[in-house]
Image (cartoon, rainbow, N blue to C red; front, side):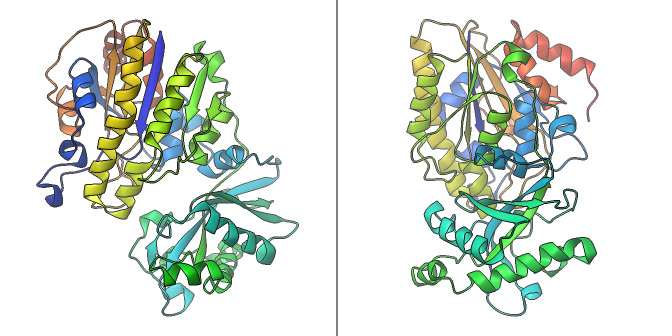
Length: 418
């Protein structure tokens, strides 16, 4: 049996006037998702436990069977692992976004315009991060370049419990109320404020302004955590797994779980990622792995940017250029296989950040021709099935069970709603 898991980050949404009252999933032309869902086990699942923040680290840990309440230590340490950083026990990792703040007023009065600085290229961001390291790095702290706007700060004896604001939650808002404060927050505030003075007229940002792009004029710290540790995925499930993603967070989860992490040239984490490259990488990996986990960031980024049409287009590209291609390979392989498709969490256009609603999922089993009442793979159609899985970290048990429907019914009946 082969298993293909496709996570469309932030794909779930709410009805939008811009799409004629439809969600992006409802508006998108996605014939492969719809066709497979009509023959699949369909329902909704909560990947983020009640009381936890709906972030991609929490949700993807759950999908890969790791209870977030036990294993979620913040996204930054996972990203650090993906970047090859050998974290020491006394070091704290922080996500370091390069963001766009408004130019007018004092630092505290500036507006968060863009958490991704127009999805700045990694090459441009690397110049900025190198400058921050030269100006603000020390024996106690160091900056490291990640991908696009997503970078890492390692700080010896840093506070790993400080509650930072997430930049994508405050787009369009004055940053003052969300900046680190008090005695504990002062070192972070001072660093972020100093970063603005360093970056605002950096040659990279001068060139970006001249090109009509948002400058990456400040660092923004958040999501601290210590070095993570996960039980081996192979030991848990007896399956050799591979992870394919453009973003360091998901790669880091894969590394910590002992899965093979496969790089794809041109995979960016944005709308213009290499969809077909991910599909081919998945096909190649399925030849010598039991389970391949493909994560696509594009719908989430569109949600954060408030781009309804582009989000629907991203879903269409995932359907046409990844799912259809991998399904064709699997259907011709001569082996039994299962396919699971789902978002990790919603990223509603109207909020431009993540939310807590359960997300739709389907599990297709090549051995079953079972039809259901699903007309298309959407939030509402999956909700109407009545199947609800309260704990996302049970999905892997359902996926790998000989009878997924029976296992899902058992878990749905036994577990209370969180």
